[in-house]
Length: 277
Image (cartoon, rainbow, N blue to C red; front, side):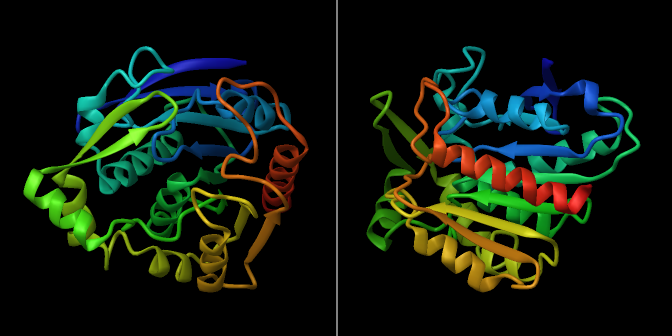
């Protein structure tokens, strides 16, 4: 069963949520899927992920960050002004509030307090950074995760400061999407503290699964290897998927799963089952 929910944060931002497996919530662990840059909960594999984990006994949540750019349409970037105002720190705070909401019974009462995070691409970094400061998270799985948030050259950053914004092209929708200087300020202010991925991974001290496609052109597999290198090897596992790209060859609109993505899902399910069951 899938239920659409709107959660209002302490900053009065709306987060659109899809909750899967509400029939499991009383006794089952909770898995929260965290989308990446230019991602959204209803992109391609999003609903399929929720259904898959619910069918396998979990209570699963997929959601849109309030400033991911996708509004009431659910599938189009119809809130580009919000997109331009997004920051990494805002996403971390919103994910943290989602975790608290689950713990406090927002979705329903439960006797199982286990929480796992599943993050894709930039969402992997947000999941890791959030979990590092949130002991309520019991385990983390990241797919195609970035190992750094500062992905801009000094020349790009200089132009960003001068113009007050940085523009990126969405190749799928052909939209020009603006990032305000607030994002750059967030990077420069917090890169050594709350946005320090190396520090977050090295101090995580909880089970970590890293999965990366060997042919990922958006986030090279070396970034997954770097995350693994920073991690506690006794608690982490790094798996690569041969001949797979950034989304493990899943497309939007969704055309179905495939053997590569099935491997990702099954590995993730088994990872959490070993911890929670």
